[in-house]
Image (spheres, rainbow, N blue to C red):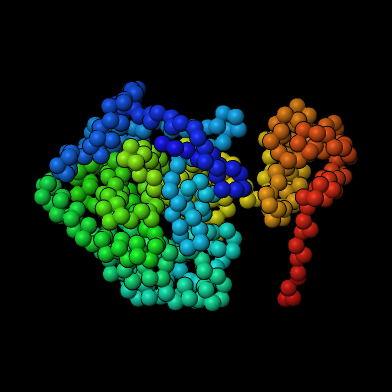
Length: 486
């Protein structure tokens, strides 16, 4: 596996570091300790995770937990690999996949996506929502496409965007038995997302107790027959496809073959990837979404290791589906997506909240900035406050934030550390561009990095900070607020 080292604010530079060994461990019984296993790596590479005759594996009795690959499955250990000099995440090496004017993978900045809530048939409002998302930093926008009428409407949306705004990269979401719909909408969008479990959908058979090899292969062949026309039209148009597996909609044959597990999700994706590879189509992005964070993390880890073993370098789209709303939805998304990004896995992401899509974008960029993968906003570093604090930290932080929040327009944005005492000051603010530190009762000291600039009375602190930023040429005048007459 080759890796890419990210450079803050710019495309990542190719690194020449050797790949760390894949770290895998077998699934332990509850309460037990997992043990290292190198056998699975060899089996995965040789067999692709399934018998060579194409027959499905025995049904699993395992539950969908962390790393649960079904009976005999394996738990990919953390592939976390950091640059020990700078702490930078070493990203998994992937190929470039172009979606409109945006490139996913190949060391490019992790791409932010979202999806509009409007019915695609409502061309006017759908167009307005796409534009609004794009204006606040959403780089790729997805729209739902459930009928031929919706597919035609996407064409009008694309035309309207070009005429009235700009050509925003669009993705069409296609699900149940969607070949005809996908073929039509592929004319109008930059990428088509299919769900392998629904693209060729057969209603589960009540009372079924097994899947024969013949039945499994019949549906596999049907998937290939149905997917091939879409692959060919996307190939001819040089457009992209996302193979988007969802834990909640695995095909019945995958459930019988691998169980309700992360491994079943991975096998579903690999099956589609191999169809595309047979047709020499490689503009692929892969996702493994689940609402349970441990399942999601396990599936993505297994996908990355499996693709690396097979020599597949396709970019990965991260997301926790159905994360919910409010603080908990943001926590779930940050843990799932952030864990994987920290391990170098992931080239694009969407935070899925049960809220306006406009509220997803700040969370996406917050996750990326916290991992130093992208810097897109002013960052305030502040201590939690304690008995040593020499001023009301919450109030002072709020004042500093109010005075500098518009500086996210700087390229790159700056970081400001607000710390309550000299104990934490010089050391803990070392990574910030500027420091605002309580040095003694009633006074604050301003820093540029570790350099002391001046000490002023507390009531003059915020203005003194603004003056320092102006002197250093990292200041923008705040926008003028215009009062609207009632």
